[in-house]
Amino acid sequence: MTGVQTCALPIYNTVHLTADQLREAIASCNRQEIRVRQLYRQYGDMTPSECWDKYGSSFCPITSIRRTITDLTDKGLLHKTGKMKPGIYGKPEHVWTTAAPSEELFDLTRKETMPL
Image 1: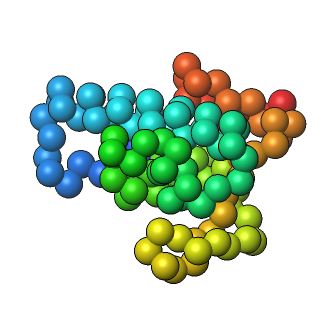
Image 2: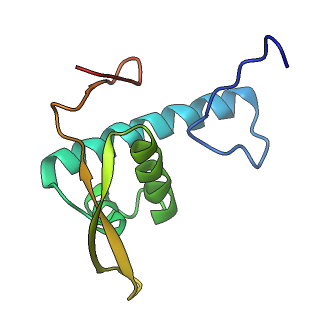
């Protein structure tokens, strides 16, 4: 289709939120991305459940943290390592690490990744 642009949203609007609700949900996801990125910078390599614990597990479900980690990985801001650790449910979990500062510059105001 000519002239049609698509953009990836940080949420999956499966419950048909209104425009105002969708705006707030997107803002919440953006704040979560910033916080998760800060946690990886502060604590280094972590599994999703370790990140969830440091985030404050009562504030959101672990699935939201996993979605955020996936989104940050897709943007090149986090990397999955070859390491695994036991997770909170007894199964092994992959460990993620933050991208090296020399690899990219993350502009939090525009939510873009810009090469150095």
